[in-house]
Amino acid sequence: GENVEQHPSTLSVQEGDSAVIKCTYSDSASNYFPWYKQELGKRPQLIIDIRSNVGEKKDQRIAVTLNKTAKHFSLHITETQPEDSAVYFCAATAGEAGTALIFGKGTTLSVSS
Amino acid sequence: GAVVSQHPSRVICKSGTSVKIECRSLDFQATTMFWYRQFPKQSLMLMATSNEGSKATYEQGVEKDKFLINHASLTLSTLTVTSAHPEDSSFYICSARIGGFDTQYFGPGTRLTVL
Image (cartoon, rainbow over all chains, first blue to last red; front, side):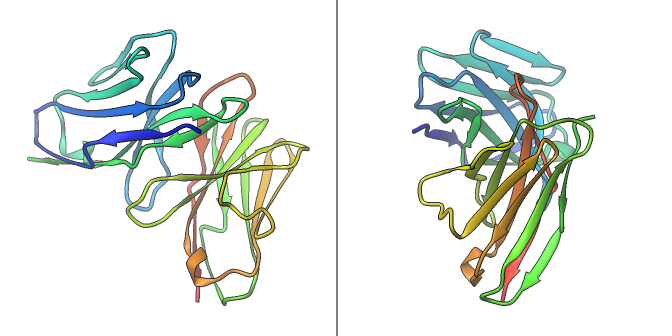
């Protein structure tokens, strides 16, 4: 089955710096890769996603890149702000119908001002 | 739009009792709903995939007789934890998906504590 690896597990940056989180997946049939932000005790919030027919997608300070050949995708956050501090999860589709999501272990991002 | 609710938000029960958690899509019809479990400081682990009117598909290692899932309508799925034990204490989160679209919308989660 699908396996998603995520690195680093923790990331500390200064306000204004960039942050990069990387994920790899094992199932070449995966075709959808969302990124979620989760604050303590809250639901995961979708921040950006990318489909397998696209190599890069950007939304203001957030961008995601996908390398299908290498089976890895990355989240890039520029000009980080303290409110970006949270746990970030990558995920990839899996299952017979390709609809279920398998999550990485998460990255705790801390942005200090 | 695309709001998913869960009830209850918190529940405390005694060991051996059963607990039912409801997941509702409030403003859309969810052809597929998913149930996840999240232990403290860990990731979301997929428990099962539920399609309306069909039996749920459980992930390896998840006991289907212990975690009963019912998806009787396009807006409601329920997870019943039967004969709960302290090790079942966790954060249970559902998500819902509209057919033909990839995006999953998550509920706010239910904190289950089994004494």
